[in-house]
Length: 574
Image (cartoon, rainbow, N blue to C red; front, side):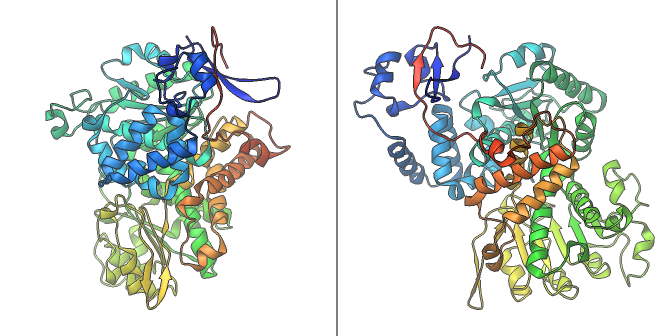
């Protein structure tokens, strides 16, 4: 039985129709209004006597929930409180989140979500989404048929092997999927009744999890090689059968698997990997803003990327695409990018080099003119030898960008770009106040997590947060608006340009190269419009919305408001 459906009355007003008895309506997060049920609804749905007499406005409910939120002292407790609210009343959850987005984003997403992932088996309370594991993959069709939403249009799926900067987290990765989908709704207005988190539980190599009596995932080592890809393939084929046309975001797969899975299925269904493509677009958006702020063209920069996982190589790919779009050849663009991992600069003569790193491995001859360097060169030696002007950190190595490195960049650029993007904040490659002090306020700084403004020599510098949430919600909305059959490289380039255009001149003058988090809804709409425009240009759109792209995109954005609810005998397909 369908739990509810949206309908429109003769005056074009939307309402909800449900066959559920009143008490079950209060247990369905998508419908529950709690003390805001109207008198008419209480009578019609059989809710009289279940709530206090006072009928609350949603504004009163937001005030009450916010007061309770502020009573908690730890970020994890605040995270759990918000998740419990979401599991009780989704409309109220999103209304509260929208009203306090800048304060609450770090709680429901990075950096607090990292701790929630690590403790997910302990804080687990409510079934949300689907878990597909080695224990139930043989019943995949039954599992997908059990999806708690009936019109699935957007899915975030993870195998939890490459979570943030904390690696393999087994079943705990489900918290990431839930958090990402919350941002799709609060930032881009995607209806939560059409979204679904999925955990692909293929095991864990963390012995502490396997030994933990409270751990909720399957208890064996991770699938690898053939059995792993067979598992994912069975999932994808079933996904296509049950959710044709739905968007699938791959999330937090590790290193080679992230690239292999992306390339294996990107032409089979509309899908993308946020760690690779979303991170790349987010970084390029910030680089474009930094170049504008410094009065330079992006093609004048020389880039070092410290960290060669999915995010690092994804960033390198997107920078290369951006440079080619601005007139460089593929060879010229690649020559301006230096990628380093824990062993140093990636050179093509390294033994057993991971396949996904090959495209950015440098010929050893490139360092022939560098004086007195190691083989492979260190980060400092690369910064000096290649005269790096833009340094991007996704290594998870706290303090990796020391004073000597940043000062060496200042010798090559009057306004060096330093993005220390690792999460959580304690893993950041450098602290913004240090970078600005070492460069006498001349550096263009961004971080992955939220940092306070920096006061230096009587001037205040705003620190922009390089957050993927500036990209992926708008990407999903633009794809949904056009019925995109594929997520093209051009669409991510369009998203990066839209993000850069969303950073105001005032914000740049304050020192930041990204908009404020509080502006995320405006940014997401602008990103979605440009993504939709590019999807049409690239020939991957199934829906022609070219008559009014901004209007058609905006019309899809779901607002967190209570709709009238009426009882009905049955609820048919939407």
